[in-house]
Image 1 (spheres, one colour):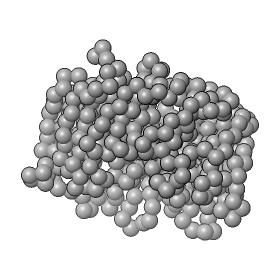
Image 2: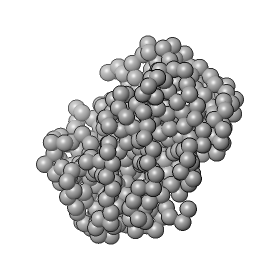
Image 3: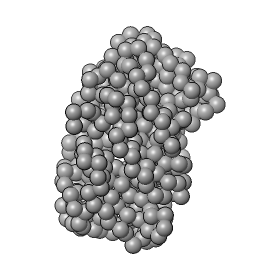
Image 4: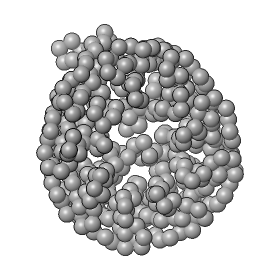
Length: 435
């Protein structure tokens, strides 16, 4: 492919009865390359730069099917008809396998299918469980880590997401299981071999906790109980042997960014933000953190913090809802989030200079831009969940983002000028660049 392509997944509404579609677009030309209509209860997963796996329900039989789309050849490689009308969705993929989950009345059945043929390699059942998802049903909380497939599950007899189950990627056997009587962060953070999660207690007399687990063995590496009784704690992010997460005390109305050593759990530093930090801290390639904080209803700020020592580099107040800021090259994008539709700044998209915090450019589209990324943001307590993070093309010149009017836009990084705009017939749930 000489051109660079992207893929969008859209549905008419968030309900299971809604029709879906997968659409491939050209970044350079700003045109549709291939459009594949799907049935109801549709889900889609980018396998690699050539393949997209789709699951939907046939409108005639109400039964599910799995399809593997070849983006380059614009053809369906294989289709498997399933004999179930219950919820099915793709959850993960590696170089040669795609993993499909089926929620049944007594638990979850996980299938490993050959990527090229669709033939079954193995299947296993997790009883009395359901897979935790981000954005309701759009993004299952599943990670491939080393030789295991880690699934975050919730049980019907408990409240909240409280368990990680690790399966062998090759044969489906259970390697380990981590259970805690608390709500685990969704999403969690992983490195090449370590899983780190924050836990929000269910009981008022319990404290929040952060822990790290060896991904392959499930052995506890470290655990840090936070002395203060925080009303919320964000999911963590890891960079350069540091673990960062946000906390907020409702009683004191004070938020803070905490930093731990990701190898030992040792407390390193704390920076007070003076507002709630409802989302995962965002970090750039230079180990600078960008924190979106808010005090209700519309008092917002973005703070840049040095990731090594916790020093505040700059803070910008009275910006569109910064949930969260998105660093792209030399700018930081800030835009309206998907749940603040009564906000007076609705529709504004602001780009700040990442070095100084000064305004680089600002545009006001017809409605809000979806500027956020589910795998990187969520809160273990009451928090916010969002749609799709803007993507930077390989030239570093264009930002691809989506609006709530079913439009895909390409904006100039330096000026915010619109290069092109594509319209879809349904709401864009996520999009990816194939590279």
